[in-house]
Length: 229
Image 1 (tube, rainbow, N blue to C red):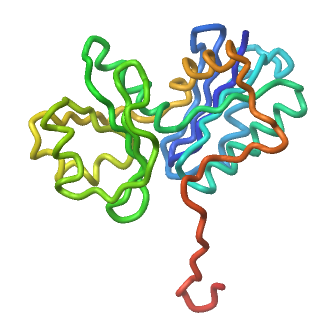
Image 2 (cartoon, helix red, strand yellow):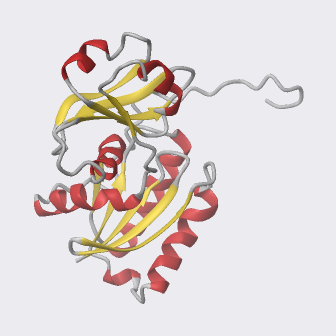
């Protein structure tokens, strides 16, 4: 089986190609929010370089959010267009779980908890809590991080904090001996395991109706710059 994996929920634009249980190619950009420019060329390039025709794809694994409103829209619309034209299914995975799956590889024999964070505004993050097997300990939620936010948790557990929301919280959390920090970047390759699990369970999305998981509604802000409306 051949899977196309798409990650556009944060500033990273990442595409991976997997054959059965192995990622065989990855193409990504770490420049801020280049999804509109790079996503479709990345997909075309990764298929061409792997000598694979689009019609050979078995399905698409998509990072569903939360994250950037625009990035999620671009990733979702691209995945839907491909899936519809090729008549193949889509599975979706939470972006926070994808972050955790990547970071967990660096701690394979440690029964730590993992707290991925996606940057929101000011000291707010989108976050969740997973055990070392990827099981949900605390569901996805928005959190304004304060000094005491993880105090009780960190008195009982070692927690690996990760994701692009982690750096702004690191100073507050560094006071705790059981806090560990990972800078491993997000990648579409992380989507393979949850994508395989959903394909085996035939947990496919309704291509016409599913939407990204924004967690919060997008709010358009009126520009304060003269001449822009």
